[in-house]
Image (cartoon, rainbow, N blue to C red; front, side, top):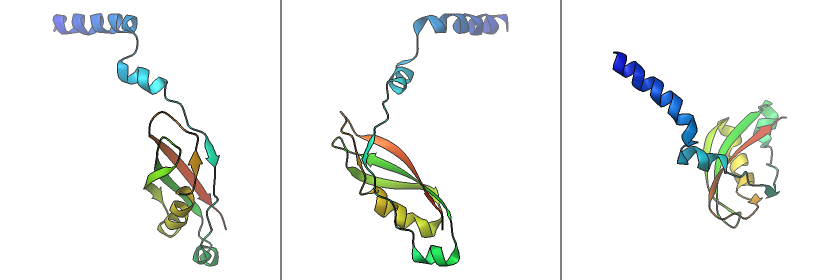
Length: 110
């Protein structure tokens, strides 16, 4: 028992001197890409009639050149999802050295 406590204490004292792990270092150098062209979604007429509002969260896989390669819906009202996808697929981001995942949230209000 004393050995385990001593080992845990030693690890907690030594870890700060070695700096962040490679995974954390990579996360901290992550740069948020700027949206160059943003297309507003078309509010569906059915939603306007039924006064449906809400937000849709989308994860966009953005290519090096800034175009959207694919979309994954993370949440939102099912009737609003298609309008959100149609808009975000037209967005353009600033170029980068590698593909990135960009989280987008679109809000719909009647």
